Image 1 (cartoon, rainbow, N blue to C red):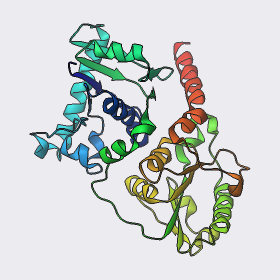
Image 2: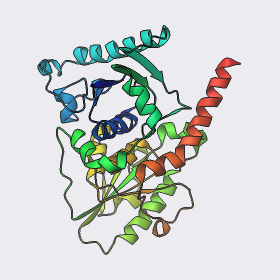
Image 3: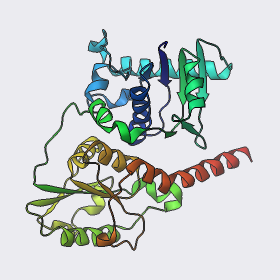
Length: 312
């Protein structure tokens, strides 16, 4: 069968979103070997993943890039992304659709179903398929080891410990996102952390790593000075690396914590309600599916309302 290319030509959010979007297509290409993936949207995350550092085009299956020495230059990486994005805009704007190129716009209220044979047949018709979107359905959980290898960190700092618990305190934009559905007070997180300490006190050498986008709010809180707790003002990537290494993660629904768990130990417990009791919560056995179930309808409603308001 002839080789077909899928070019992911947009940036659906930040790190977690982009990993999730790309991972779906890695799984798809693994299951359908005549497809190749190109995704240059990780241009501003240089130095994080080995495969993207070697090839800023983000190809899968991975392929050696003769110009890989240019990858360290931000301008070169940015140029590659803008080229694919511009090509998509032109193809989509003029509705070019032939055996050579076509475009697909899966806006925030649409899902591309990569398990649907009709969709597969449609993608197989054209040599270069330019796709924009975020929501996706694929056999992602069946290809987790391939995805983990593709997103292997260039550098990782071991966190040590025989049993490590990660707590992701996500606030900032969550105050407004989804009408503040998962925006909880610091006191709520402190309560949860105290319950986590109680739950895991029998674990030898257990450590609780707190990762957060609001470190200043956590500083000097007496309850967080517990000897098991590791509270550091890390950068986003360092937090992601830390969460990936944790044996289990407690977090509100977000792609950041979901993908850290998916690429790491694959154990995540979602914090959904202010009244949640830690000892009653269960591990998510299907992280991506559970994340979609908790957020997708709300995100689509938010997108639909924003679009409607723009048209008023």
